[in-house]
Length: 166
Image (tube, rainbow, N blue to C red):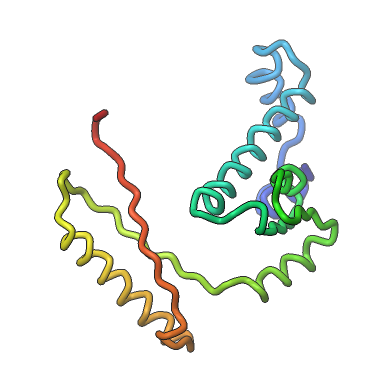
């Protein structure tokens, strides 16, 4: 971690205080070195990134054996790309080039969501009304951005959470 360019240069990291905090709050209580504590934090963060990528790909129906994944950037790219069984795993060292390539070749996507409380059983028309509002907004924005409605692929997803255990 570059203490001068921490958070993209927005904050200058006080390296001595950061090491002391890591030592006092993590390393010493676990009876490990500061380096082992930092490595553990890195492992947890990159594992979380991998879990998030899996939730956005495999759990939405993408097939690992025929999909490729290409990541860029510094933190986590080496770990996140270790996606066993995928068609290609790529960890480019020239990440800025791949970032630009990814932006230019990626699908255009907007995500619209709405949180709303309801009781089970939920009326289907209630869901349809919410989806129609969100879809109309997506269509309007996309047309304004120069896309044709016939070229849009609108997908509906519902994520339900419960107030208390069922």
